Length: 349
Image 1 (cartoon, rainbow, N blue to C red):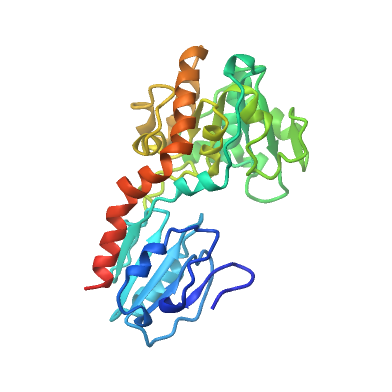
Image 2: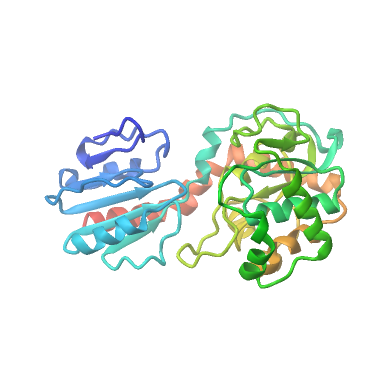
């Protein structure tokens, strides 16, 4: 059964048509599964609560978005303990306490090559701004990054959006930051952040004249096409014990599609994950990438000073060509192939 609102298929594997555009061909390998008429699958469940029939031997739960419904899976783990349970996810769930599940991580970032068609990009020397950043919701790490970058780089090309929500409270922001990170913000940085809070409207506040900046998925924007260096502020920053692998999204993909050097302001080992997928680094991240949450964000920002455009251009050219010419096959053949075979071996036992 395919949901008309979520594009999720739930049902017997033998009737699955592998046409879910949200996950591309991530699950096509399951065509090799034996006795597919005895296998139930939910291909991309996200927050869905679905009724699970009792009469199958094997159950496959796919999660290829930003969320994994742990409460739902814990309930399945308890109620279907005598069944073969498989979790396939684009988030590393290996630390989840699901004793009756076999958990498999499937890399998915290479599918973005199909979302972003190849376009010509401007050489760095022709671009107008040194630094750029795009911030959606005003989460703690995002507002810190924006404030610090505005301090260091007056010509910063930026956009951000303040939404009317309880996600962040100006009144307790500084105490929350100290509680979370166990450090006090400098007086100068506090003033900059407070000014941003005071001036932020309940819409877009930007020095980019582009009506599409609120979408977030577009790459043909000045923040990517008209700067020498982009700061990719990821959705998740704090370390999550249940998710040992760094969390990356389209935010760290778009600079690759526009030939723009960038740094990731995200979880530990974010740059290491990109490196393992074949991309060359724009700066020496080896020590910075593993620093504690309390210091990593500002340490990365403060580590990059003068920009050598010739060197950056060479790396940007390599990464652009790797993204469009090699990235997909590299992930499928060098990263995912072994995992997918392990899944089939377990199903076909």
